[in-house]
Length: 353
Image 1 (cartoon, rainbow, N blue to C red):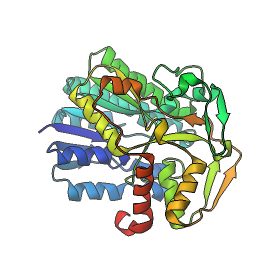
Image 2: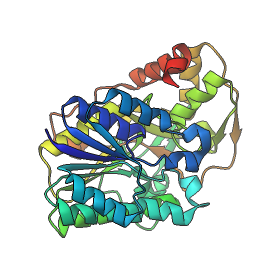
Image 3: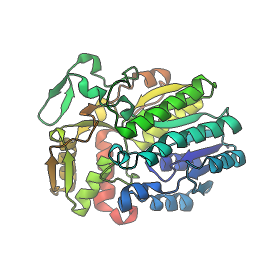
Image 4: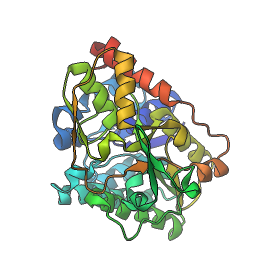
């Protein structure tokens, strides 16, 4: 049995991690103060997920602390002495970041630094997993040559046929304030690995998804579209004709990548993690698929104003991670993801709310 600390434990990836490691017999402390509700209102409320964890996980203990509180974080590390850290807590919206720049930077950058330093002081041998983001690449992918197809854009340059790799520049582009705060955290996580020799990894996620997501208009678009369809809400697409493309990776496959790293950690690692081209889909294609699954039409409209710094096309080149961890497999297809959402959203919504 190991002691595992999970931040953002009532969020999508954090809750998946907490349940997974509890089921494996590990002692799990989850850190989450439901700040997602403060960010996104009732749609972002994760209290239901915390309740599920506390009711169903026998070895789970919740700590409702704020990762910006350096003293509280240090006390937790001193008391619990985690043997692995899975850091998922974040302010995740690049639109919202511009309205709350101090909160955004303090949660994403300062909170990450608090955790890293507490780990260095108390458990420097513990692998440290950080859920970074593809937004560290800013709008650089938009500068690539693109081709417009009937329902999506795509990369025209054959060098990017498999997607965006880790050697793509994060410099000299527009990130959004959210992207900038995550860059700061990402580089700091790398530095604690390279400078101090700690086993740290940045997983630069594409669209991390699954039915455990508390989707809101400003974050978690796939979950939110399903919510809009199920509840008869109007959905607004922001820019790019609705042809912007994202790759989707299920939270279970994300945890599989975490497991692979924990079994063979290394210092200062960086991996892009997403569904890849096979799991890529545009918003228009998403809406069409949801309408097919639900048998109902979604009310939606297109705003010509795109979100600042938003990607037109992004999907993940998984070659580096697959080379280093060849036993890891992407187990959940894009069709599986949509069917799971449909099951929860349209058939047994009451039991999932």
